[in-house]
Amino acid sequence: MTKHKPVVVVTRKLPQVVETRMMELFQTRLNATDQAMSKAELIEAVKTADVLVPTVTDRIDKAVLMQAGEQLKLIANFGTGVDNIDVETAVARGITVTNTPGVLTEDTADMTMALIMAVSRRLIEGSKVIGSDNTWQGWSPTWMLGSRLWGKRIGIIGMGRIGTALARRAKAFGLQIHYHNRKPVQAKLEEELEATYWDSLDQMLARMDIISVNCPHTPATYHLLSARRLKLMKKDAIIVNTSRGEVIDENALARMLEANELGGAGLDVFEHEPAVNPRLLKSSKAVLLPHMGSATLEGRIDMGEKVIINIKTWVDGHNPPDRVLPSML
Ligand code: 8YV
Image (cartoon, rainbow, N blue to C red; front, side, top):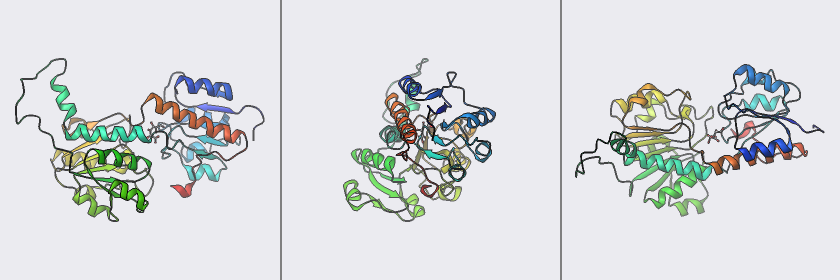
């Protein structure tokens, strides 16, 4: 452990209060330009930092980790998902990895609900009609019809913190809660949500009006929603994703939207961010957001606070509270 203040390299610009506190506590190197770091810059960082604070835009893969100096002992990810980090290699090299769970749950669940509303009730199409060139011709009984949420079935894939927070919101909107998870949630929670557990994802997909992806991206969930599985969905069903693009076969989804084989999609995340499939860009059935699920000022400050607590606990010689182990993935 380091006796003097550890060198902490932060790869992106963080909220001011977080950066100020980090500067007080550690020998912190900030990124004032907020430009995502290149591979060469990341390698340079891991050669000199005691602690690296990356985000989803930094790929800390084997090639980067193999170049890390002996001094790198902690990767305190600013984010909950750690699919940007090769955790197994990091841990094998004696590097502790932490993340920021819990503090972005409500914001991400809000954004998921917002996407469900936006797709079902055609919010973006409607708001474009009254844009700067206002083309609205007046009200009509059969124009801009969306579909009702109340009474429909939502199937949540991944009933962790965010999935559960979404289920609570969805229930308040009159949706019937269904979910697929590695195992059923506790009976008390299932009862509160009046939720139905589906062991078979295939069977759940075929019966839902709305599908929401809320599981992490791991090797086991890559393209979980494959072309075959997407085809099981009802033709008028919608799908929303605020987790990771890689969980859905984006090409297959885009093709299905184009062919009118799905009701719509609300996507906050993409397989090859920041690139977005051109077919999705053209689809009037897709509502697309640039990875904004946790983008509230409060959320980002709370995430920073978690990062600081993880680093500080490690500096003080304890196990950081949000350690990520390969067995958890
Ligand atoms: C963050 C997220 O914005 O925490 C996560 O896993 O997906 C986002 O909400 C981003 O990952 C920060 O690195």
